[in-house]
Length: 480
Image (cartoon, rainbow, N blue to C red; front, side, top):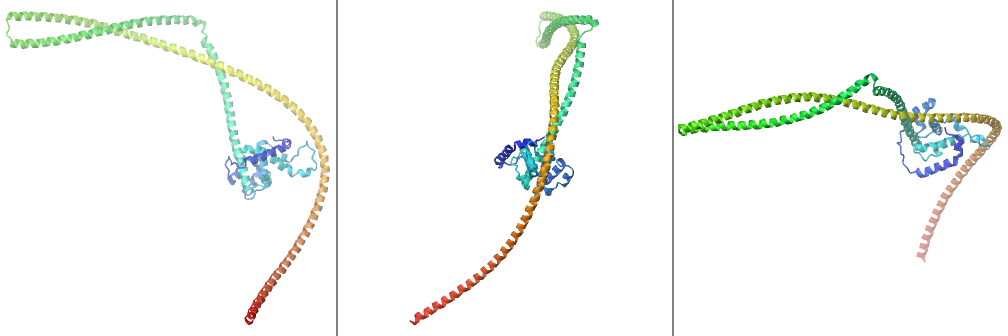
């Protein structure tokens, strides 16, 4: 709440500040929108004024001739809305000063109070050139700009209050979430303790499972090595079979070509029977050799097929083992993930415990500050009671002085009435003198007009005489 005594103490400083602001920012343009009169009236009716004041506040109070008392009342309501400074407080004079003739300050105190408080408030609305003339003799454009600045500031204040309320609600929601998180952390810590501790009944089984896992890992490594060796052997066998099949195909092609050549030669050449027999024996021996080599190749193929089947069976067994290994790996990954989650939960719990400790420290500090404030408030209440007693005594003395001042005021009022009657008589005399002066001036004007007309007639006669004299002179000259 604004204090009138502070404004009284800093009267000259505020006037200097207002003067400096007026000289430095008179040429500056408005940094806020200037609203229309209807919008200003509607806003002040709904958001500032209440009751009968809101009903009677109209557009005619601002334009074309603003009413000073209405504008002063609007400024008082704005100060009440912002600072809680009621309009009745503007009519109070400071009790700390010895003021003579309080009746003379009855009209000046509220105006000066409103002026000083508006000089402190309007720079926040970017209005720096507020003056007493805006209260005593307001102008329409000037009042509209000032009220527009106040309206813009009140809109901004309303938005900020809404944002602060939203932040407060969010803070409350965050505090609720923090409490829920603390409960969840405590529950998680309990679950972690349960999970980390193995019951004594299952410790032997856990050790057996760990040993079995180690054995399975060693066996899988050995089998994987054997499978890799078998795969290498199978690959080598496949390469040999491919080479031999290529050789067989080449030999079959050679035999077919030789048969064709033999047929052609038989038809063309007639040989001796001995050579034919020898060649036939050679051919039979070659055919036997080829059949033997074929049989050996078939046997090798059968052996290789058997080996391939064994290798495929080994691969299937290896795949089964690999699936088991993958399952074990997945279970191990899950256990590792669970361990990581447990570690992250532990870290979160530690961080939240630190935050709780910090919040508890802040709560302790706030409680201490509240205790200090309560002590100060109790002391201030005692001081206020003492001040109230002193003020009551001072008020009683002031009431006695006020009675004396009231008597003096009545005497001064009687004197003022006597002076007013004398001034009225003097004004009547002045009016009579003015009337007589007007009559005399009218008479003098009439005399002046008559003189002008006579002078004009006289001048005309003189001109006629001069003309006649010149004519006579010319006649005389002609005679002489």
